[in-house]
Length: 271
Image (cartoon, rainbow, N blue to C red):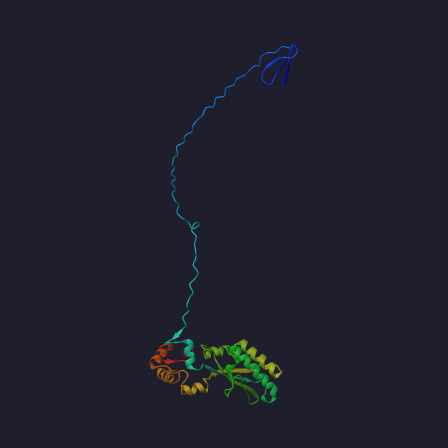
């Protein structure tokens, strides 16, 4: 309850809202307070509306375009053809390659001063050097007797001569072989090889490459001049040794004869 204090009378307001005089014993009827709460109900009605949003697309730029690059298609490389034959088939049918003869005259070394051991070293060193500069396996180096992986060492007056035949790589001409064997670098390598073999410094020597078709080539081509292989010569050779028909051999010859002079030079024959 709550107590209210006046000047001479003390009242107590009870919990029901009545007023009592505590001091004088007076009392009154409870004061009833009626409160009316009115609740108004409001109904909210909504009407759905449809909104249309219109957008105008902007043109695509390179920033918006996703480029998907397809993987490259496998490329098929066609083998070079010589008439009806591939280059490899032609080389196999031809049965040989161009040969270059190589002779080296070493004026600083007397043949009589060479021992069997030093001759063996000289052969080994020069075989490796010549094969390296021409770009062929050492089996393409043959001595004058036709023995593979060998060179001939002989005496010429007071000098020492070294001679061999070199099977050139397909496509290499004799002129290219000459450049390879007589270059400054090659001469340095040959001098170093000879110096290592004989045990003393060697500076004076001559390198002389020349055309050497080899006995097998000369026999099979009937010792034709290497610069003048006519169509008739080639057709006879092709029919006998290359297992080609005349039509095939004619097609091969025409493909080889780049300058159309009706004959084949070394560069044309040994592609």
